Amino acid sequence: MSTGALGTWVSDLEKDKDLIGRSSTAERVAGILRDRVTEGFIPPGTRMSEEAIGEALGVSRNTLREAFRLLAHERLLVHELNRGVFVRTLSKDDVVELYRLRQIVEGAAVRELASAPDQVIATIRAAVEDGERAASEHRWPDVGTANLQFHQGIVQLAGSPRLEEFMLRIHAELRLVFHVMHNPRRFHEPYLARNRELMAALESRNTQHAELLLAVYLADAERQLVRAFAGAEPSGPELAR
Amino acid sequence: MSTGALGTWVSDLEKDKDLIGRSSTAERVAGILRDRVTEGFIPPGTRMSEEAIGEALGVSRNTLREAFRLLAHERLLVHELNRGVFVRTLSKDDVVELYRLRQIVEGAAVRELASAPDQVIATIRAAVEDGERAASEHRWPDVGTANLQFHQGIVQLAGSPRLEEFMLRIHAELRLVFHVMHNPRRFHEPYLARNRELMAALESRNTQHAELLLAVYLADAERQLVRAFAGAEPSGPELAR
DNA sequence: CTCACGGGATCGTTGAACAAAAGTACTGTC
DNA sequence: GACAGTACTTTTGTTCAACGATCCCGTGAG
Image (cartoon, rainbow over all chains, first blue to last red):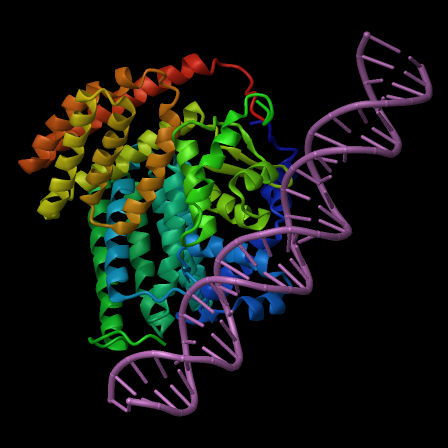
C-alpha cells in the first residue's frame, strides 16, 4: 500500500470517490426514500403515489419510477402492475424465513472463521463498541443499527462481496420487521452482552463456540419477533390497510 | 468491439419485436435482453446503445432504461454514468468469488438435507434426468442449463425463497462465465455422472457424503474455469472499455 | 344483497425536447 | 511528427405533456 504516513487524506478521498460518480438523481431519490422507509416514517402498506412524491421531491415521474424500481428490487417496496408501489408489509412467515436465512448464511460465514482476515474481526469489534456506546447514551435506535452492523460483519467472514450485498438488503428488510417491537430498548439492549460474548469467541477463533452462540442468539430473536407478530397480527384472514 | 461493425445481433433483436404485447413492456424487454446476454449472443463488453436497441425493439428510451436498470441490478449489465450500459465482463477474480459463494451456500443447503421435503429431491432428480436426456440428444447447451437447474435444486434444500432468488441471479452470472469454455460438451458432459452420484447421496440422505462430493465437484469446476480464464485473458493490463 | 356499469383517478408508455457529459475531429504551435 | 487546446457531434440524463389502459369505487337496476 502506498498510503503511507503522509497521506491519510488521500485514502479519505477515496471514500468520496464513488460519491462523486453517483450523482444520478434516481439513486439519490431512492436513497431518500430508503431512509424514510427503513426508519419507519412511512408505514408498511402505504401506497407511494407517483404524482404526490414526484411533486414533493421535485423530480419527474420517469425519474421517480426508476427510483421505485431500485427499491422494489431491494424488497422495500412492492410493485403491483397498474396499481402502483407500496411499502412492503412483512408477515410472520417472512420473519421465519428471514431468520432461517440468517441462520444458514451467518452460520456458514462463521464456519469460515479460520480463513478470515483480522481486519474483519476488527470491524465486528467496532460494531460491538458502537452499540455499547449508543446504549450508554440512550440512543436506542442506534443500538439497533450497530446490531445489524455486527451481523453484517459476521457475514464478511465468508469473504464474498456478493453475499455481503445480499445480506445488506436482508438487513434492510429486518429493519422493517423490527418496527413491530414498539420498545426498541427492551428489544435491542439485551443483545449487547451477547454480541460481546460472540465477539470474544470469534477473536479467540473458537469456531464451535461461536457457531453455538450464534444459533441460540438467532433462535431467541426469532422467537421474540414471532411472538410480537402474533400479538400485532392475530390469526385470521389478512385485512390489508 | 463497437456497435457498428459486427453488430448483426442488433437486427436479430427485431425478431423478438412481436413478442412485445403482453404485460409490462419494460420487464419483457429485460427478459429478451437477458436471454440474449446469457446465451452469449451479445458478447461481454458490448455497449448497449439506447437508441439502437430502442429502435430495434420498438420501445421508447424511457421504457428501455427501466429494463436496463433491471438487468444492471442482476449484474448482467453494468451502468456507467453518462457513458451508458455495457454487457458485464467477468474476471478471474469473479470466478473465484462465485465459486467461493457457491461452496458456502450450496454447502449450507446440503447441510439442511434432513429437514428438506421429498419434493425438492424430486426436482433435483428431474434436473439430472433432463441433463442426461439432453446429452443423449447432443443438445450440449441444454446440458449446461440442466446443470444449473440441478444446482438450483440443491439451493432449494435450504428452504429459503429469498436465497433461491439470489442464487438464480448468481447462476445467470455463471452462464456468462461458462462462455469462456468454447467447447460446451467437453465442459458440461463430465458432470452428468457426478450429478447422478451426488443425487444418489442426497436421496439416501447421506449428508456427509453429499457435502464431500459437492466440495470436490465445485473445486474441480472452478479449477477448470480459472485455467480457461488464464488462457483467454493473459496476465497484463486490462483492456476493457 | 348481488352484480353490472360508468366516472374518475392512477398507472404504463410514448415522443419530443434540452442540458450536460463524453467522444471525436480539427486546428495551430513547437 | 507529436502534442495541447478547441470546436463539433453524439449520447446520455432528465423533464414534460399527452393518451390509452387499467383499476377503484359509488350508483343503480335486478
